[in-house]
Amino acid sequence: MATRGRPRTFDPDTALRTALDLFWERGYEGTSLSDLAQAMGIASASIYACFGSKEELFGKVMALYGATSGEPPRRALREEPTAREAVHAMLRATADEITRPDTPHYCMLVLAAPTGAVENHAVREMLGERRRGQFAAIRERLARDLTLSAAGLDAVARYYATVVQGLSVQARDGATRADLETVITCAMAAWDTLTSATETPDTADRLAPPRSKGRP
Image 1 (cartoon, rainbow, N blue to C red):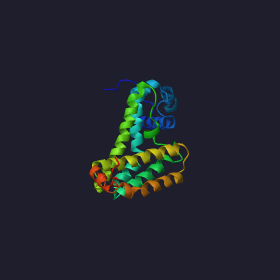
Image 2 (tube, rainbow, N blue to C red; image 1 turned 90 degrees about the vertical axis):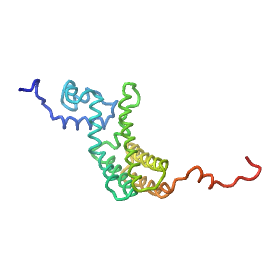
Image 3 (cartoon, one colour; image 1 turned 60 degrees about the vertical axis):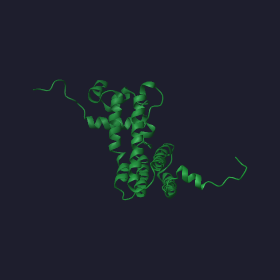
Image 4 (cartoon, rainbow, N blue to C red; image 1 turned 45 degrees about the vertical axis):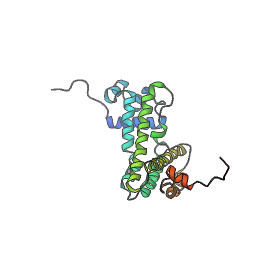
């Protein structure tokens, strides 16, 4: 049976990569459907037919971003032999990706998010969920090697997730790859302190200096 409708006159993979470049450059709210149609060289109707709404297209773009620029940091977490080496390699891979000369200098998970309109809440939540996934991946890798409490794993993972996000902000504001390396060096210098046995409330009480008699 013959396929109904007119055949596509564009390559969806190429069009999606073009959309990624535009969203990466302008962010979600700074990119209109007409901007996308012009950059992709297709009609808005074709965008809807192939990718769905702007929100759905952005979701596909973020999946592509995760499989390309987002993959080296995740691969470092998976493949390095120790937690320390994995986190260090993750930070360095992140810095490499966000300072490439052929792409905007920031991570889309951090800085492409919409900030204002109520109708963009779902997009903000989608990006937030991906960032939470980044935190979870770091925590999972730490848990493979370290004997920290659950709270300790949360704290260390959140610290390094925050460093990842901060690198993106610094790169957007003009920090070079060498500048980011100094941040990474400082972050890794904190490793031993951060990954030492986590204090419990009882431990904190025992280690607290004795109070003087007669003082509250």
